[in-house]
Length: 392
Image (cartoon, rainbow, N blue to C red; front, side, top):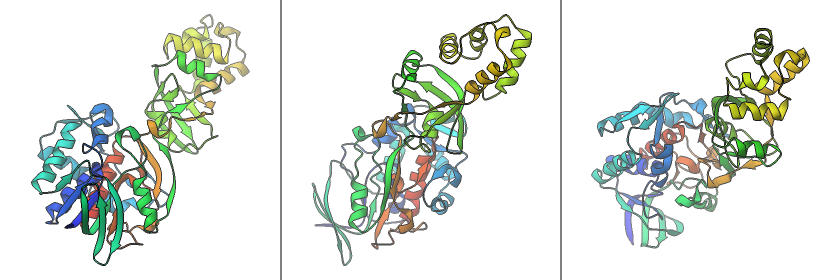
């Protein structure tokens, strides 16, 4: 039996941050992961460049049934704290847009930084180690693993959610939560592309790879970003963002002309260029192929002078409020995050400790806290990992 002060299960973003921060406080830390590599999700994030935080992080960027829960941790370890760590290690980075910070080189720069900090702080990292059973003892917790028996005073669950099972995601953290009396709120894929199966499927396939600036709206939420057509449906940042607010059966609205009043623009075009065809005008805003396909889908393309005022109104409505109902999402296979999870009303917002089982902590994505797209989920991992590390 190997005894230590702290055991953390899960060597992803939150687990690594918690491990290095606790060890820097002088705690004896063992970090376990069933995978053969730490931080696999860090490596693939941001297209391999890791969108590691966002300059504009604030509690409003997070979804939770208990929206105030994230405030305490985010206030104690901010984006500026993580940026300072990145700067200390000389990792070059840049702001892409909307406050999103990315590595100049590769995601591995962030992972190596965290692993070096863990190594310097004497964290005992054990990969290829699966946890079979966990039991509460008088002095803490006892674990049976593929590498033998372990005992600890504080046990931290940093196992993540169900997103991207090919990277090793499982529901193990939810299983542990339930074992120790916690409620797990219903989970679903978040920040995920939509699938389209109706007559629009052909349009999406035809336009696959085409990207357009738009405002995507659903259930009183709106995001302005790019929309990307795919063979399976719709993707791109605007769609990933709005997917977290979408429920099966809901419609989404797309404003394909976010910078102009569509009716004013069409009326002006009709007055100034009466002989120009609708698809020609749309081709100056979208790709020619997209302009032709949209014109064919919604209205017969003809010279502008041939449209009545009511037809112009109808065209404007389609361009500025295109309403469609996705068949579903691509699911956990490609989802960046898992919505729902361990109910935060049963966890201390200050310490991240279970209110049901003393000495048990939950951090990162396993909790019912989900950030918007753009580095917010990483910032939650850093902040929650750091916050728990001060108390384990």
